[in-house]
Image 1 (cartoon, rainbow, N blue to C red):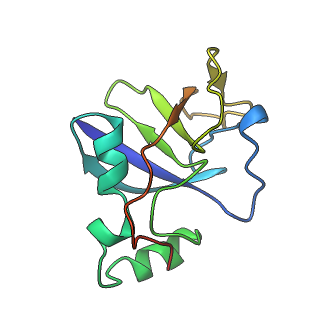
Image 2: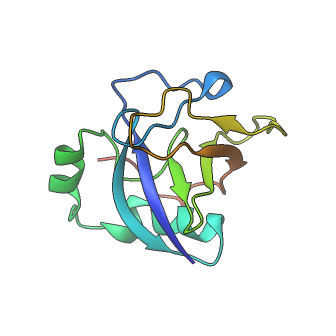
Length: 127
């Protein structure tokens, strides 16, 4: 399945208890990634996999984000528009879905569910 990966703008606070996902405002589209489920897509978005030699540096700088590897607060969106925010390991996952609180005019309103991503592979880190 193809997912769209959006990274949280690190200049904004990331509060998963009052989470907001508004593409172009709270999150920046980084790239499409293929994976057999969210966990595989998450692993494919680790910097050591998709940009092991710093290939994404210019993209990351242009996007205004501070990290190459997908992490807490980043979002995957599938082809049907279902979105999942990456939660920290050990955080209890809420059963209710969270909505973007301030959809921009002409932009889709997303329903966002939290999911606990697998632990990051050893040696992967932000640039």
